Amino acid sequence: MNLLERGRISAYQFFAVLVLVRLVPVVVICPTVALVNNPATAWANDVIGSLIAIPLVWLIVHLGLKYPDKTIIGYTKELLGPIGGILVGSLILWLYFMIAASVLRTLGEAMVTSLMVETPILVFLASAAFLVANLVRNGMEINSRLTGIMVPVAVFLLLVVIAASYNLMDPGYLRPIFFAQGLGELIWPSASVLSFYTEFLVIGMLLPHINVNDPRQVLPLSIGAIFTSMFILVIHCLSMASVFGPLLNSLTLPTFSIARLVRLGVIFEHIESLITIVWLFAGGIKVSLFLRTTAVGLAQLLDLKDYRPLVYPLGALMVAVSVFSYENLIEVISVLTGSMIVFSISFLILILLVLYIALGKKDFFGKGTSNAGQG
Image 1: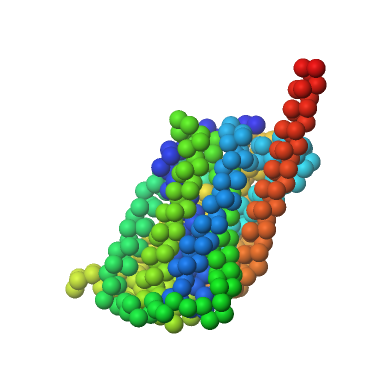
Image 2: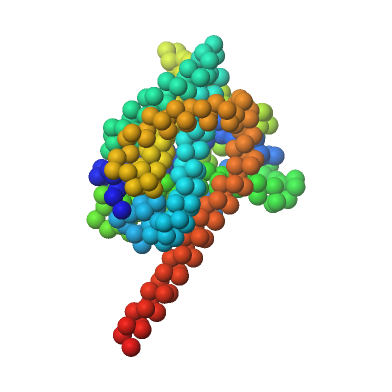
C-alpha cells in the first residue's frame, strides 16, 4: 500500500513522540488524581498502569514488525480483506480522530481556565485547529522535529517547577501509605493510567517511517518511552501530593496550581503562564500527530493519492466534535476517568485480538498451502 508520505523520523524523534503522546494532556489536567482515595499513593497507580502497558505495546509493535513497510491500515486491509479491512480500519481511524478532538478540547479548556478567561473557547479551538491543520499539511518530518525540540523543553520546565516548589512540600503528606479499601482501590486509577497508553496504537502508523538500521529497535524505544513517562509521572505525582496533600483530588489543573505558587528568586514570578503555553504547544503537536494519522489513514482506506485535501475538512470536523462532545472541563475529566477507560482498553484489546486471529489464520493456511505444494 502506498504510504502517501515518504517522510522519515529518527529513533529519537519516535521516542519523543511517544513520550509526548503519553504526557499530554495528562500533565496538564492529570485526571487520574480525581480517582485516588489517598493522594500519597497516586504514584503507585502510575507504576502499575505503566507496567501493564508494556505487554500491550509489545503486541502493537510485534504486529507492526510483521509488515514493516505498511501502516496499520495497510496490513488491516491485507489481513481482513476489503470489507473487514475497511470496517476495522474505520474504527481505528475513529479512535485516532476522537483522541485529536478530545485533546484539542482539553487544551482549549486549560487555556480559557488558566490564561484567557474572557475569551470564548470556540475562538481558541478554531484558531488552534487551523494552525494544526497547516502543520499537518507540511508533512510529518516537521512535526517530528518540533516534537524532538518541544519534549525536552516541556519536561525540563516541568522539573524546574517541581524543584522550585521544594519549600512548599510537606513530606508528611506522603505518609502513611495505606489502602483503606484494600488493594482493590488501585484497580480503577491504574486502569485510568493504562487507558492513556492505548494511544500508543499510533505506532502502527509511524513504524514504516522510522529511520533505524534494524526495525526491531522500535520495541526497546517504545518500552523506553513507557519507563521515561512513568518516571516523570511518578515525580509529578509525588510533588503534587507533597504540596497539596488531601486537596489534590479537588484540583482541575494541579500543574498550573503548583507553577502559580513557585517563585524563582526575586525576579521570576508568575511562571505558570510560560509553563502553560509550552505544554499547550506540546499538546498542539499531539493533536497534529493524530489529525495527520487520521487523514493519512483515511486516504489509504479510500485509495486516494494524497491525504492533504482531507486535512482541512477533518480539522473543521474536529472542532465541531470537540465543541459538541463536552460542555466544560469537568465533563472532559469525567469522561476521561469514566467511560473512556473501559472503552479505550476494551477497544485496543479487541482490535489486537481480531488482527492476531487473522494473522494466525493466514500463517496457518499459508503453511498448509506451502506443505501441500511440496507434497
